[in-house]
Length: 233
Image (cartoon, rainbow, N blue to C red):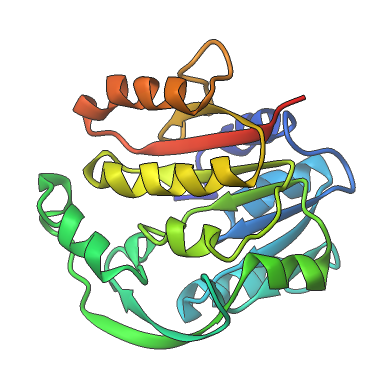
């Protein structure tokens, strides 16, 4: 479904050209089966695709394993390197997570009523700082890790030019904690894009307080999306 929707990747590529140019580097943290990878390669960007789930890794390697512009990193990302448990939803792998408290939070939302995290696996963990040391400075970092955004951002000690992280209304406080970590890294401006629309909710880029007000407008609708941050000038 992520690769077969007509026109989706063209729209996605047009959207991400705001952040990425040909030859620039992007990190896809929580790459899943590579929908962002495909769009970014359409731009001509180089990609580090980071994904710990074995089934998703098989798809990524099938699609991009021979592409010299794509590096597939079979790990999770967290506050420190090591190993951790990943709770896997076999039926809905997009919501597999390393954040047990997040499972408790979203399980109270009716949209997750049928989701079951039916097994767990041990996975290796790296950090954003280590990824930068190995692969270079990214122009853009996408973080989609189902409630583990704070863990990922805790492993980043320097500002990057632009990044995004997932926002889920059922886990609003987690998003605010992630926002605090981003704000501590540098002088960022923010915007929000509702789920997969590739459109901005705000007409202007905002400071952190303005973003929170914007999220509060969308929060009652219960739709997820992505917060975007770019360094101010």
